[in-house]
Image 1: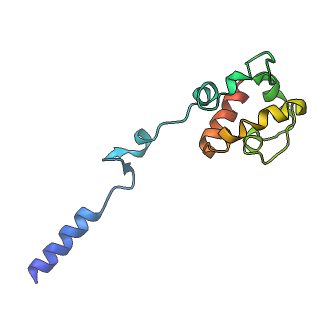
Image 2 (image 1 turned 45 degrees about the vertical axis):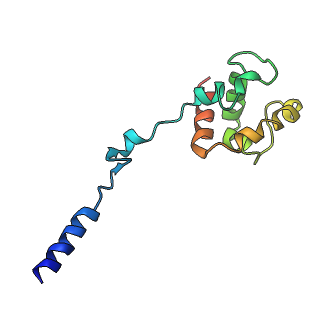
Length: 121
């Protein structure tokens, strides 16, 4: 009987895991890197190919996008998911459609990081 109790306590002790730890004992806050909107904008998203901070190149500037979306209390994330219509420059919508293949594969966290980065301009 003592062996059964000892075995049960041993299993219970080793099966309990701290909620705050993940990835080989590292705290969750250290295990998960925050997504950089700037890195996504300039890298994976390739947004920089058409959008610049202060001037229109192919697409509207980030400053213009930010101002209009803030003024209309609209969501850039919804647009990048192709869940809402363009509100900045409808004439460039056909060009932007090709990039939805990229943005639709992004996580909600990545899209929010992109939106935050654009809103910072």
